[in-house]
Length: 151
Image (cartoon, rainbow, N blue to C red; front, side, top):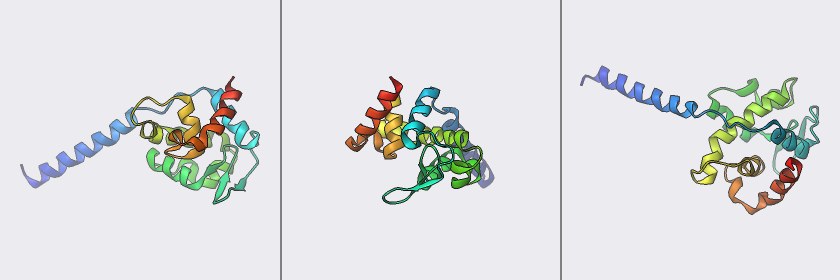
């Protein structure tokens, strides 16, 4: 095999890996799930802006942190909404934030669950507690709120 053939083979393999990652698709979650998260995080206030959490800022109606947005954007292969604050607090913050959440859930859903199909509970707890949120008891109370809202 020539060096050019080797480069082409490696390029094809890498392209296949990336295509497989995106072929899985984003989670299909009901609108009510997003309404409940929004209600719990900000009383679904689209003009809330950014709020100081104990360690960092959380922005928009879903209270998304910059690291969350970065992880989702990296997974999506784009700067979702152009930038963290633009996405989470701008004119299109509801749909942009939802796109961030879906990419974040796709990135960390099976990672958090150890490979099994994530449930709506897992996604809520990941939103609240990060990549390992579905495993931490610290997110139990958050899930209880979401569960009550979902009915």
